[in-house]
Length: 258
Image (tube, rainbow, N blue to C red; front, side, top):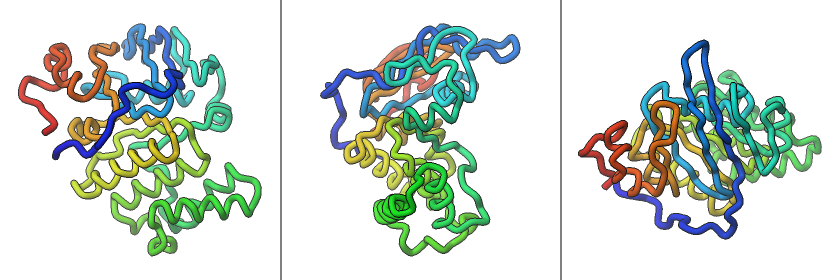
C-alpha cells in the first residue's frame, strides 16, 4: 500500500509539547522495561510507536493514562506534572481518550446504548449529550447500525465504535493501542482516514502503537522506534526506515512502505 497521507506536518504552528515523559524508567519486578526514556508529543501531531514485543509501547500508554507510575522520572501533560495524579483526574482534566487493543465496549448493549453510556459519564446536560451523540453518529455514519448489539458488529465496526466512544469526551490527546490488528485492508484504510480527519478537523494529538508497521507509517507525521527501553530512532516515516539502528533492531534491510 502506498502512502495515503497527502500531507505531513513538518513545522507546527505551535511547537507546544502536549505530553512529555522525562527521564522515565519502569521496572516490572526486576526487569527494566523503560530505561531513562525521554519522549515528547507535539500538539496536533500524529505520532507512531514501533518496536519488538515487550519493548515498552503499552507501558508508555500506561504511564500517560496513570495505569502505571514510573519508578523514576516524570509524566507531564500540558506543562503540568501529573505523575501522582489518579487516572480519573487525568482523563477529565486533561481530556485523554484511550482506544484499547481489546474490549472498550459492552457487547450486550446496542451501538447507541454504548454511546449513551459513555456520554452520561462525561456530559451532565441531557441536551448536550444528545447533540454530541448525534454529531458522532453523523461523523462515523452509524445511522444504520444504532440498534445492533455490539457483539453482532464486524471487527471494523467495533473498532469504529470504540474510537467514537473515546471521542465523546472531546479529547485533546487520543491514544490508539494496535488499532489495525486483525482487520482487513479496506477497514484499515477507513481507520487511517478517520485518524487523519481527527487531526485536521478536531485538532487532536494522536499517539498510535501497532505492529502493522506499514499501516502505521502510512498515517503518522512522526514515528519512533523503541528498543531496549529507549528511543533509538525518531523522525518522519522515511527517516526512521532509513535509520541504520532502526533497520538493525526492527525493520531489517528490505522493509519499505511503497
